[in-house]
Image 1: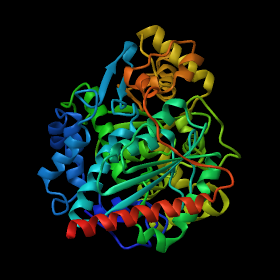
Image 2: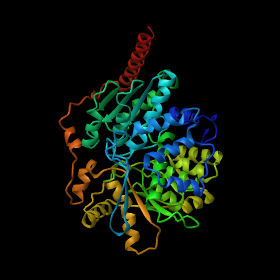
Image 3: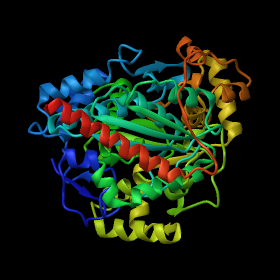
Image 4: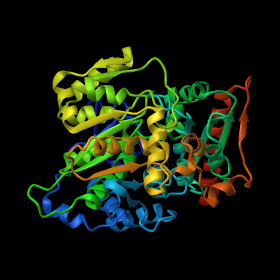
Length: 498
């Protein structure tokens, strides 16, 4: 299995190359050169599999056995999921009036990102140990919003903590996290600062997300420095994360489809709440492989994806609008590039022209044929804060079930459809996070937060966080830390050799 850039200007790479690259050198995103087509018999065989087994089958299709033999692959995925609280790893809650909620948040940090990052970290460590190499992962936490920049691996507060948990204690990986002090939720900040392993280095920046981007951009702009010190990011453009997220859609389909005996196979509607469009890209790929799902993308008031689906208007708003579903307060859903490439028939020229225009002007109107293909495969909605709290309240009233605000964005679509008595196929709403992570939103909905003991315990743990104060040279501090880590790795290798 080979991977090519959506912009077509980069030599193809294998899975290992795509995993370690993040962005392709031409600024595009890696996609499989060919997508396997799944027949009815394969879908029938897969329909009885557990979630971890589905991840194994999908990864085996996209990672050649010459890179990771199948037994090793199975072991890595089992290891990745070993710390999940639910024995099924993900769990479907069947609630009243046909509401199905797929809980993707049973990992260590109570967010869906644990699923893909736990596997991605295992794949990283496998290759690093094999090659006797070391990487330093650099993450800039942009709490409450993600934005586009090929030079800045900024990511949300949930990704910061999930990335830390996925690699903590790994001997071939160091992780540096810059977080804007006082701009994340208290829980998100504690999840990042209470991990005291030697390979975890958290800096608390006295500034906002935009200000902490600057030293990271400066470091990643120095190509020779990046190469010398094996720097990488783990944000949602990494192909490995999209690959694992495809399993959400297969599992949702098999859990909700009434029967696999009908011809053609009956559809299931999957409602995807998203910001950066990684879960949506995963669904579009699953669809292209033959999974009969209908995709609905649900966003908050940061509605670039909604406008793109409805009108072909892929343009930046003037500013990010803060919402209760803060992890989806995102300016640029960079995984849309993968979807444009997929729906244009893998046309890298069209994709490159679109994305280069977008980077220049922050505004693109999709070509008519591309827009019509997009609106054929995806329906969309945009949801206000008021609708989020109403949905949370209604779900509690009808089911005694607490939704996080991001899950409520998806469930609001279900209520809209059932209230309008629209005939529809079975529907599954993806739930990306536990309500326990967002007590402020639960209170805003007039409900009582339920806080698990593990989250309560964070308040009593020792924290470690190096301050980056105003007046300090943040770029120099970051470069010095990276150079120190490289030196320590070289010393370790020399001692091991002796």
